[in-house]
Length: 325
Ligand code: UT7
Image 1 (cartoon, rainbow, N blue to C red):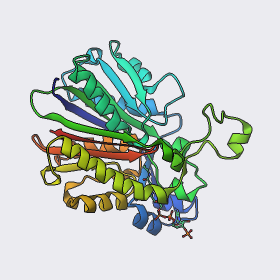
Image 2 (image 1 turned 30 degrees about the horizontal axis):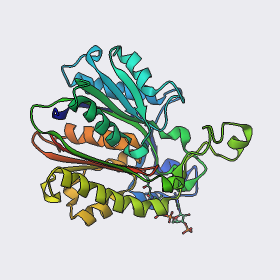
Image 3 (image 1 turned 180 degrees about the vertical axis):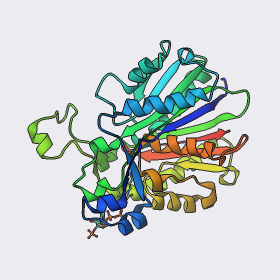
C-alpha cells in the first residue's frame, strides 16, 4: 500500500460577517450567552446567490495552486457537504466542471460534521491502492440556507465556509491512521427533516419549518465529548502513538466547551489545539477543513509534526485521522 499525504490546503470564507450583536437584534439572545456557552463571537454568511459550489471552487483553486498538480491531472474529487447546491447533481461534479478537471471521478459524501475526515479516509484508500494518483477533498457548507433564523437554540451556532486539501502519494510520513464510526440509532438528535423523500417540500412542510435544522443540543454535547475523545484514542492506537506524541489537534468546531472537555479527557494542553470557532461558528464539514488550512498557513503545523483531525456530527458519525505532516 502506498503512503498518502496532504500536499496542499486552501480555504474560502464568504465576506459577510454576522456578529453576536447582529443576532441580538434577530432573536432573544445575548453576546454573553453565546460567548460563554459556545465560544462563538461571529460567523460568515454567503451573499445573495452564492451557493456551496461557489465556496468549494474558491477553496479548491487555492489548495491546487499550492501543488504542482494541474486540474486536468486530478484523478478524484470528493466534496463533503450536507448543503449541496441542489439534491443532484453532486457539488463534486459542479466543481469538476468549474476546474476543467475532466479526468476526475467525482462524488459527494454525506457525513455531516465528520464529512471532511470521512472524505480524507476514502481518498486515502483510492490512492493507497493505486486506483488514483491524487485527490482533491473539500468540506463546503452553506448552513445559513438551512438555519431557522427564528430558533435561538440553533441560529446562533452555524456559519458558511469551505476548506480543501489535495492528497497524493507521500515519500514518507503522511496519513498514519484513520478511524471512522457511526450510530444511526441516534439519527433524531440532529437532522433536517424536510425536502427529502420522507417529507417532500409542500406548503405544509414549509409551514411546519421542516426545512430547517432540528437539534437536541444537550444530548449531543455529552456524546460529542466522549465520542471525539474515544475516536482520538482509537486513531492514535492504530498509528502506534499516544496523546503526548500529538503536536496539533484539529477538532470539529461545534462548541468551545466540547473541545475543552474532550481535551481534558485526553490530557491535552489547550496550546496543542487549533480553534477557529470564535470567528466562524460551526461550519459542519468545513470546520475541520478550514481549521487545518489556517493552522498550516499560520505556521502552527510544521513539517514532521503529528496532526490529529477529530470530528463528530449528525448521523451520528465520527472520524479521526493521524497525519505526519
Ligand atoms: O456539530 C456537531 C453536533 N453538534 C453539537 O455537538 C452541538 C452540541 N450542543 C451544544 O453545543 C450545546 O448544547 C448548545 C450550545 C446547543 C446549547 O448549550 P447548553 O448549555 O446545552 O444549553 P441548553 O440547550 O441546555 O439551554 C440552556 C438554556 C435554556 O433555557 P432554560 O430552558 O434553561 O430556561 C435555553 O432556552 O439556554 C437557553 N438558550 C438560550 N438563551 C439565550 C438556548 N439558546 C439560547 C440563546 N440565547 N441563543
